[in-house]
Image (cartoon, rainbow, N blue to C red):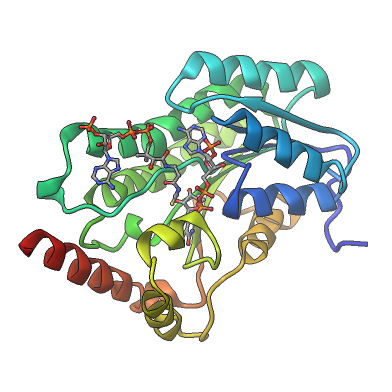
Length: 271
Ligand code: NAP
Ligand code: COA
């Protein structure tokens, strides 16, 4: 029996078909929730739905790009029609690639801002009408780049800083409806697309491990446990918070990844 009981609760994880967000979807499913996942690729949605059915009875999935509000709205409406009001929405769709600001096109910068920041806004707008009032919880997945400038991450830094301010603003605007809005800020999470893109070589991974004060990379389950807590009654007085779940990485060690990226991007641009 898991320590959290989310039976009879409706949970939507946007971007829930791989990596950290899929780990979050699995944790809510293991806690008994009805879980819906959404992302762009039908195959990933299908695989995730099949895997979640091993953990809980009611599972749904739909395809939507968070940059396309109409598709997102109709997917959210389909979950609402099937199960009723949503208790928990996790908004974690994101894109990333390392590139120096002078070497990315305006469209490259825009694509990440559109997915991470505008996409989070679209998710919030699509979800608001069908969130349980009072009682629902919206959780954004942030990143260390929201607070820490990193070479090769101008697009992500700008976008995730915006996501954190969106968290705080929505927390204020929705507090009187009884909806809490928080963020979880993961550290470096092992075996994820984000880590593969920012620290692709074994020596990069080793440098990152050494920079985490607790001496290890995180796992999706570390982030999932924080979400289970933040969405629960135990966190009823917490709103507008962005919780680092990073083994102390954001206290300083996260600068290592900027240095690793800076070295490799600048040496490839010089050659
Ligand atoms: P990931 O496996 O690539 O997960 C991204 C998810 O979002 C996938 O399900 C992807 O599925 C979906 N997605 C991407 N673009 C989308 C779009 N335009 N519309 C809808 N869905 C979209 O990445 P991850 O590394 O686990 O990262 C997950 C979250 O954690 C992100 O918010 C990231 O910024 C944050 N984070 C990660 C780390 C880390 O160490 N990995 C650290 C800090 C923060 P489709 O391809 O099917 O769309
Ligand atoms: N360096 C510089 N520019 C890049 C790039 C890179 N590594 N990768 C993509 N771009 C540019 C493209 O050239 C394009 O710009 P252009 O039109 O001026 O040529 C722009 O970014 C958009 O690329 P496109 O491939 O059309 O975007 P998309 O919408 O299909 O995909 C991405 C979005 C680029 C963010 C893609 O990497 C993605 O889907 N990521 C999701 C998974 C992920 O990033 N996970 C980690 C989360 S932390």
